[in-house]
Length: 260
Ligand code: IPE
Ligand code: IPE
Ligand code: MG
Image (cartoon, rainbow, N blue to C red; front, side, top):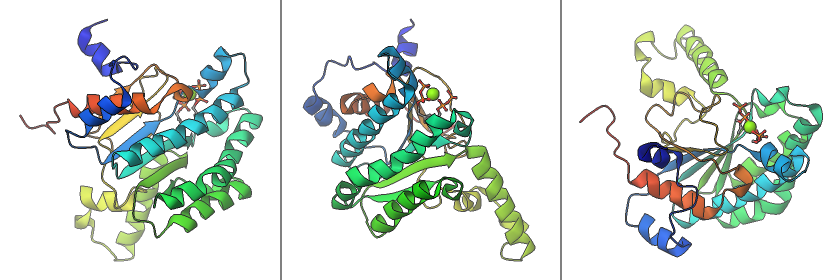
């Protein structure tokens, strides 16, 4: 494999550095403000172990906790977890049912820690279309953390970026018709305000696990200048060390935004 391509794919945990060495290294450089994560590979992780797919989702949920802790440790401001896409409804009913129960479980096990961390949970996506028990758990997360001022954690659930963009367009047209805004006011900054990520910085870094090199309808508008990091590691195997390695890789890139 070409060296540059290998670097782009991520080192897969072989930087050889310990966690404390990595932390020391990371703290020498600017920390990304916003990291988006496409958590992929739960099903394959389970299959490799002869388990049913939902066992992979249960294992994956634990990694969410680890990555939140790791991100909070280094002062990341926003973490966005792609948890369930608008396309994931196509999966078998049992799997969808299981995934919809995860927020309820996560609420029981992790809400208190998130409150203690001063973290603020926000849901990106149409939670109204999820089962009532899921919606209730998601609303409780948002409600109990809404005044917190620390790490912002977005869970993208029933989220699709094309859907988000279309909704923004509808909303903008409505506001033009109502006279709330003028057609000439429509620019990038206005568009940002009509998206679900309103008020948040664009992701500096997007990580996708499991070896798939695609975006799968995640933050299409917002990622225009994000750095992308793909790793073969399956999400349930994605440790805090691998997360720190991805950040360290990001810190050595040159972001030019079209300039020289
Ligand atoms: C990611 O893992 C979790 C969700 C998309 C909900 P997958 O369930 O997609 O795992 P693979 O890709 O089938 O291995
Ligand atoms: C992307 O993973 C969606 C989430 C991680 C929630 P998928 O497994 O659904 O993506 P595809 O189908 O491989 O593109
Ligand atoms: Mg997948």
